[in-house]
Image 1 (tube, rainbow, N blue to C red):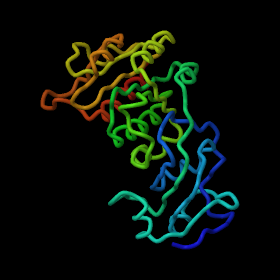
Image 2 (cartoon, rainbow, N blue to C red; image 1 turned 45 degrees about the vertical axis):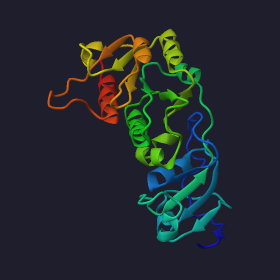
Image 3 (cartoon, rainbow, N blue to C red; image 1 turned 60 degrees about the vertical axis):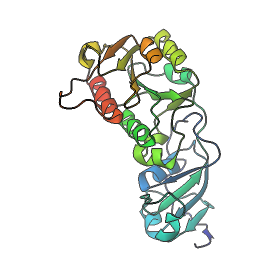
Image 4 (tube, one colour; image 1 turned 135 degrees about the vertical axis):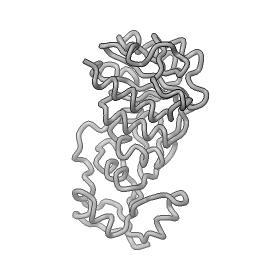
Length: 263
């Protein structure tokens, strides 16, 4: 690998974007991100503290904007970058080491725009699914996703790559007690709909016109009984009988779209 370089040109847009959001207790120690969308979004986020960027010259020149002066950059070959990430990871010539985002508390998002849905994930642990849900939540203007502090993936390169930049902009609230968090949402006026394949009502029938929290469980197990009990309604997506269920990230995207097009 080459020595560190100090150049004004060669930067993502760090510090320019306003309104970056913290993600809660995401990880212990440093977080390593890779791929153009994930790295560029992290560089744009003023709430993200960066430690070091490894990059090929071609990938660095392709970033949109300029790095600030004295930003710690180290040129690297593609083979060198491959040693910094997990096997067969599509790093696209960029690997960024940074600090986890700061904690975000539930009351901070409940005080926001109640016309936008909240996505609640009950023990969804696959980082690819959580990343894809973050991306859909950002695309359909959700106010936040909420997970347990435990039984949810930490902030990571896998989540960030699947989220395609949305991990930096979509508020991610981690709570100790998910049932208590659902009670707080109800007190704030949210109608809590749990997605369950066995429910009689369809999602369209259960969807209200006011504030809504979409509650999804892990694939296979679905919603835990206690979490389902803390929902105001259970509803199913009307899929073909030929398929037993949808991937949780696909179900979240469909539910978010339906919430977005309500009258």
